[in-house]
Amino acid sequence: MEKLTNSYESMFIVSLANGEEAAKTVVNKFTDLISANAEVVKIDEWGKRRFAYPIQDMNEGFYTLVTFKADGAFPAELQRLMNIDEAVLRAMVIKLEYDPATVAETAPVAEEATEAAPAEEAVPAADAE
Image (cartoon, rainbow, N blue to C red; front, side, top):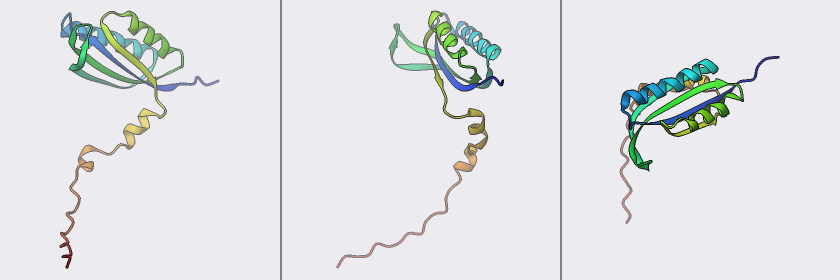
């Protein structure tokens, strides 16, 4: 029987209290954990960002978004491990309703999407008499 895998996204924010290098170490720890237990589709390190409101008296954090495919038990374990780690300020794992690999292949390229549309000819407005 084939093992059923689902697509997931994990977003987590790591504290910068111990410096940016320590934050990158925590990010690498969790991305390696995901790589060991799941098929990684994409890793986006958004880097240092300001918060909309203070979290644990901090105004900045290191954001990371990981898209992966795994069996149903791993995301719950990943969420549990992120909640235990004190360096992780916020973490969320969600199940995707679509396959992220196929969406990335069919997404339009940014250059194609920004091509200028032909200018419409100006039509004079009819004067009301």
